[in-house]
Image (cartoon, rainbow, N blue to C red):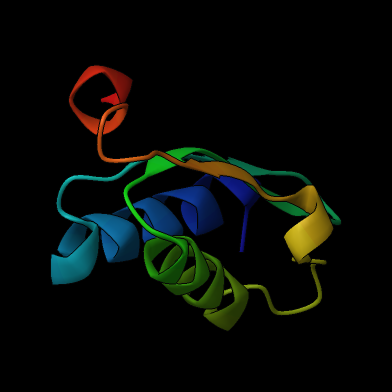
Length: 81
């Protein structure tokens, strides 16, 4: 599977996850890594996004250290998206 195909699959899965409907997560895929970046309301949402990406990873690396998803506080959230 190409990087672009994998990226599209992960993006689609993130969009279709009801708990991430307000999330702003970008996906980047290289031959060896999947990177996530963006903003979500809670740490549970961050874990959900990472779990979804991991489920598509195959031979690529997906680690929490490569994820730069910020969990916005309640006061930040309206302006974070």
